[in-house]
Image (cartoon, rainbow, N blue to C red; front, side, top):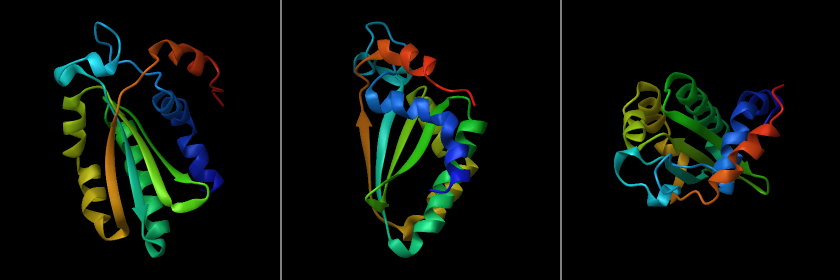
Length: 150
């Protein structure tokens, strides 16, 4: 990823790291997202994607665009953070965090997501959406206190 793309996604980094380390809560009584029920539960998932090498640059542009546009335009999209495996650039992981199941469903209906979804199938060799359950909600404040605002 070039420096311009890295800087574009840097503000989302703390959220992605919080999700990956399990530091997000569902704001539900009892604590853990796995314990929250219904549409009020925060939705966290990791999209595991393998892209055909000849489509890599086009896919990276599409994924970056839909991620930043979703976070900017949808108040209940907390994080969409695309990443590449360092040793396998066609292996993409996207941390996705939505305030609720309803927010996730609304995201799927947006024009920018529909354009991404309809414009990239031929680029994708495989896709798996992996639901995640945050484990340590108490670590969130520590993660954000270390975030450099610049």
